[in-house]
Amino acid sequence: MNTQITVSPTACDHIRRQVELTRSRFLRLGVKESGCNGYMYTLDFLEDTSTDDVQVEVADGVHICINRDDFDLVAGTEIDMVTQGLNSALVFKNSNAQSYCGCGESFALSDQDTDGAEGGENSASVSDLATDATAQT
Image (cartoon, rainbow, N blue to C red; front, top):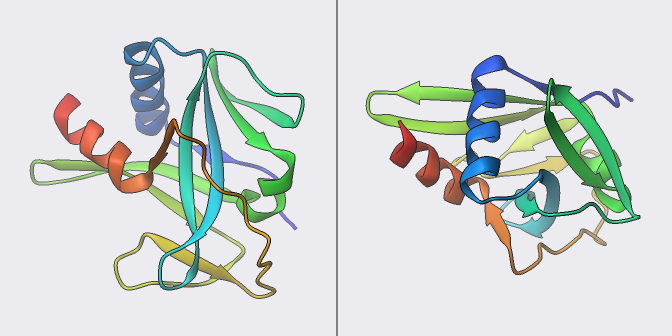
């Protein structure tokens, strides 16, 4: 299984700006059970990491934290920033996903684990961050 998280330069720039705007130090990438297809990505802005976090430096000064419980679910994910017209959004492509829902917000793995992690109160769904991206463009 691919354990690398890759982030495009434009997505790194966007993440860096969002972390600065929220006065955080890290972005946590996770998943929760949701949507019509199994799992949905979550994003949390963090002041400090948890002892359960795996920290991945995706660019100079850009660190993404992944809870160990979510690591296998997000391993192999590619994150890109896509602009269509006036709208910009982070797009997640998980090399281990077997299917995506029609709206593109949830995905399924071949061996669905029903013990998915729930996002915390500072969680943002992908669509929430996409809204932030649009506002910053």
